Image (cartoon, rainbow over all chains, first blue to last red; front, side, top):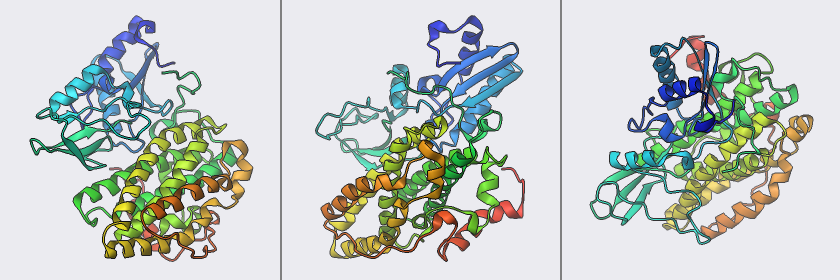
Amino acid sequence: MVNAPALTRTTDEQAVWSIAATVVDPEVPVLTIEDLGVLRAVSVDGDQVTVEITPTYSGCPAVDAMRDDIVSALNAAGYAEVRVRQVLAPAWTTDWMSNAGREKLEAFGIAPPVPRGSVGAIGVGLGIRCPHCGSLHTRELSHFGSTSCKALWVCQRCQEPFDHFKAH
Amino acid sequence: MNHSNHVVSTAITPESIADSSLVAPEPVAQYALGLGDDALVLAHRLGEWITNAPELEEDVALGNIGLDLLGHARSLLTYAGSAWAKSEDDLAYFRDEREFRSHQLFEQPNGDFAATIARQLIASVYFVELYRALSASTDATLAAIAAKAVKEVDYHLDHSVQWLQRLGLGTEYSHQRMQAGLDAMWPYVDELFREDPFVAEAGDAAVDPRTLRTAFDETVPRLIVEAGLEVPSAPAVRGGGRSGVHAEAFGPMLAELQVLARAHPGAQW
């Protein structure tokens, strides 16, 4: 089983993928696990369905909820034998987040991750845009936020604090 | 992105390892046990800060760092346990003090916030160098755990450096407390980089800690001096964590870590 691009999936696999792809991140319910890049692969072997997901961070507790939700969603669709495997390699990166996912995040009030590698030779990070008012006049309040994947920022224009999904 | 050099579907995590056929070779399991204990013990110490940090953001930060480390511990202990048909919980909750292999740095009591930052600075640089090197392990599972962990510990290092500078270059009082924190933790540095018998057995699957010392010495003293502080000259402690020798504070910490699991064996959340 490989991290199959959509075109190489069989019809059966595509059907399973489409169902698994409806599961959302319990911490960021506007994002599906497909948007997040957490859903990596599916395979179908007779009645046995296997779904591979990758955790965002090593200790992320949301992974357990996602696994249960994948099993429930596939059971409800008539797949009785569902196995969810977690894979660590290759390591998850925010580069795998879809553009649709980035837009949904921003609309939800979370500043999406900037692409990695966008910081040049001089270590000056890009400004993070406030998801409330759009200003780039923002600053980091804390390196860490409400979940492993987020940092806490504040907008200097509208004064609102906001979560920023860390580039990883 | 080219992933062709990676093992694409190595099952590693605690939940999936039970139903996989992945079994660590004995010397690799022995090596992974020490690394897992390092991460577990430090994660527990950091968890003790929750509701006690100087500000809410630091409760969250230290808790998050601890959570990442706990994730590393779970993967490493599960993989180690696969060699002996033991679960991550068997290893974390049902071994006694002398069976833990963690280096003594990680069990050091939190002290004040500056002492915790000093411990975290030393730990983060060590972890960054270790996991960077271990990403090239000949053991695919250890390599995958390390490649994931290195991105996380690199971010932790950033947090420690920011506080090192803020406290070192802050007020006279914060400077004094930061220096005292470094002085208290410095004797435990040397042990991290000593010859490790389990490493020799594991061969190229493991990283010889002695090879990491140069990078540490090129990084940490520079960071300390940039923060206006002095590199401590305190002599190293005898150490012995890898062979189960621990400081007095380790026993009470372990008791707290294990009490619930031992009072209710097999209990489920």
